[in-house]
Length: 198
Image (cartoon, rainbow, N blue to C red; front, side, top):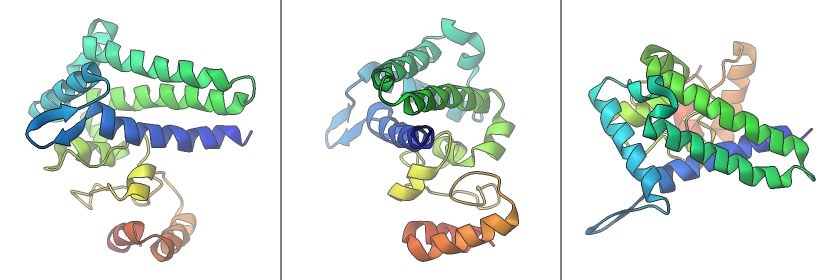
């Protein structure tokens, strides 16, 4: 059963890495960005352009699989879960956790761009990714965990930001000691929790 939460952490790390290096590509001086999957990078940059000009909305998700960008995202998620399926015989809970994470990723990402107000409130880190001046930050979509771990969470509006680095709604009696403990243990998180959390 420990495989399920491990899968969620693993999936968040893959989400961060794939978004940064595959979807955005690696900048190269004097050359175009490099991505090992150029079609996915092209799709993603079109998504960015559309979202910037339509106040965070992407109607492509409303078109379903007839939209090539949506189809590309679903294909990528299915490919990743096909790879993790190889672990099913030895790590069934881990594998099921990756299925859940892929489904949740698509649901959350799609809903946030079809309902921008929901996205701004529920996943402000992803709203910042698209609408902040620096679009090469805030790589996570479902939860901001790896952005805090890797120091890539940039908050544009403290009023809209999540109240803890887990990006979960927590009761104050849990959130306050959690934020206090994180201030002590992790400098990147400390900067956030000191400014934004009680």
